[in-house]
View 1 (cartoon, rainbow, N blue to C red):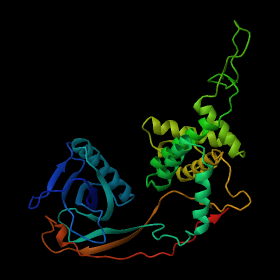
View 2 (view 1 turned 90 degrees about the vertical axis):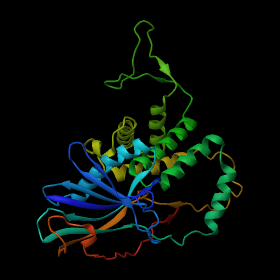
View 3 (view 1 turned 180 degrees about the vertical axis):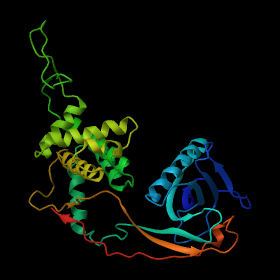
View 4 (view 1 turned 180 degrees about the horizontal axis):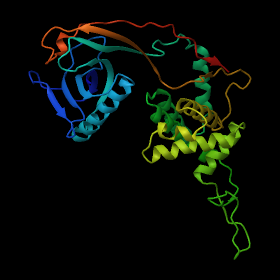
Length: 338
């Protein structure tokens, strides 16, 4: 079955006015990509390019992920060739594009952020807490940790969130690690190594990984070893170019749960870096806490069958009916004061 996936992209580049759509074909005929400028829409200012991806598939099962993976392959090449941004904004629809049929099945998508409204929770108590934290901060290292934590909070990609939180945790762990020396461990059994010539255990200051393990045990005493092992597995995977999904079978949790656990541990670790005196020590400090920091979208889909006018052997996207629907949801409060 031939399919057409209709995307919009954000990009640093667009076509010159009057330019015909551009076509990119995979050398193995895995897909064909057709690019043109997106129509101006004040409600969708991020969409710069309109992209139709045409490919063969056996069924509509998992078609959304399948089409996005195909698109990513093309965008990887475009990004490298141009040194410019090409990022998916929306997958609007997937249509059965097989030549010669009159009735066509299609899936229409509507995507909206899980939390698309600001919560009316910012008040003077938070401002006062921020003021006191500025007094209590310990210096440049803490500012570096806080910066990476802030970037992790606002990142939209799961791997980016994990990486930024890990950077912040590593800075906090190095800052807070104890000064005593510890034995070097066997890489196989993790027992202390012994030098027969010296008759003693070689000692060293804690390495970065050991410092992180130490601070996790300090701020998350329950299952600390399992938490460290899981987070370190993901960290090694990402640093070697892999993705979180590739190691899920080695983890006791989902990727989202791992990122949220890392965020909690990092938040606690950065808290240990506030070493200066509180200017208002007798006054309670209200800090906000969220147990889920992963950015997610709600995706609704409508499966339809429609008759397209025109030549069934040469279908045109302009002939596809303009079918639209909206999704509304009531956001729930996710802030708890502690």
